[in-house]
Length: 249
Image 1 (cartoon, rainbow, N blue to C red):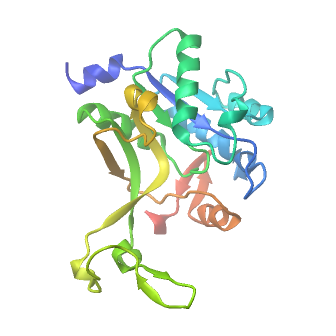
Image 2 (image 1 turned 135 degrees about the vertical axis):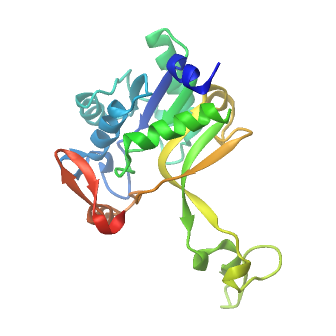
């Protein structure tokens, strides 16, 4: 079976994790980013994907649930309290929502796509590229990533002790020449496409073959108002959709 044939037969569940109890920015997921809320943008982008079968919002907040539903997401009930704290990690949340979705829709989802509302510069094409690559390369997961500038490279970082002394943070030879450094990457939070088996059994959500997908447009991961303002500076709204400014492309 070709990857295109597999795409046509694959059930893909998008899960939008959106707690109500954000401490950094209260009700962050309901903040308006131009015309829509952050959770609204996530649900809208999922609805425009060609490969997502169903979209689910995972939340402990009824207002967030109602907002996501207005953009086409399904809400199957409030997330349990033990999965809604500041210390909750992603994998148990995704596993819980996957199991609820499979009971509700009476089908098995082979791929789960996590779409965090804090990345509003996401394109539906980003989602589809991750799912396509996951299947084409028989991967366990595909995460979108962004390159880290070399002057922030982990081999150039230091730790500082109480007396003010600094020491190279990583174990190994200190490297000062940029030419000797390999490019490193960070996850940018835009899309995580993950196989069902990994969602069920791997807390890292990476599995044995996790691939990185570099996007060709700016990204943003909103944790503060500075992040929010910076993200807005990168784009405009055209006909209800996000459009990147020419200088950012």
